[in-house]
Image 1 (cartoon, helix red, strand yellow):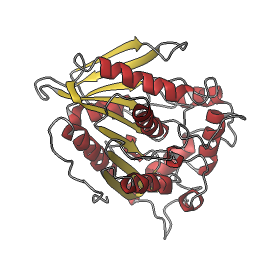
Image 2 (cartoon, rainbow, N blue to C red):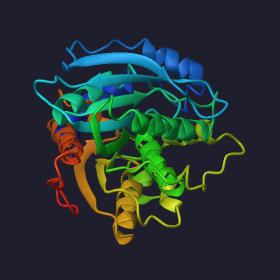
Image 3 (cartoon, helix red, strand yellow):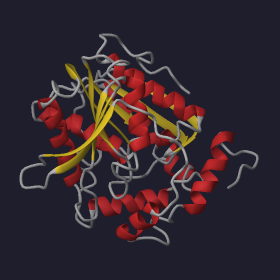
Length: 334
């Protein structure tokens, strides 16, 4: 699909999608081994774009869940002159279908969020499937949240401004970490920022069918991710796998949810926003009808991505400023 009449993808995204589709491994099709998929992705050329500058970057390892290995994290601090504290602390979980991705794959995005929000970001290198299947990544995300809450003075300094954020599978982990925090008595979260989260393992929506092919990350790859993550015995209906199926969403933190119109996950992200709102949770949405799954990582190329990142950054920043974000109660269609 290459930009013919009726193409719903924004013109500035079509060329990028076609290029990415031509070089990215055919996950779930010709490529079904996770290790080989990672090797192929790591071998792709890196774009010649200088990463956004932040105050400092530190790699360290924090304690994992009981009986599990330590979790590598990368801590991004803003320039203290540009963003004096106290500031928000954001636990960020990267996308990649719980199978691919890591600290390096999302370095540019996290730097951009750090710079734009003035927050400290803790990027989490959670365990990947199929080597560590559900709920390993979930428990790693929650362990990182607990650690950040316990070190908020060292990190951002504002205990009222603890945030969970992530894209795709990382958006799912962030939503689930918020659920677990509610169920286990904390920590208190000021905001959950979810960028095109996978909210339901059922994969049975109009957007899954309408956007199955032609928009980079298609239904075949997404189904393969779920298979790797859950394995043959995993419970896709569990609320920690599919937060859209959680029974009671009342009392969860405010949410900022980004969806893309050419993304198979679009409908479930919007459905989760609706369920949160019906449960009394404050929700802001930014919908980008001409964008694709993965667009958020291209803020240096795509206007919609730049605007979406700015919206997430503003929502994060607002947690430390005692003010509502600009898209409160769901305006902000983009």
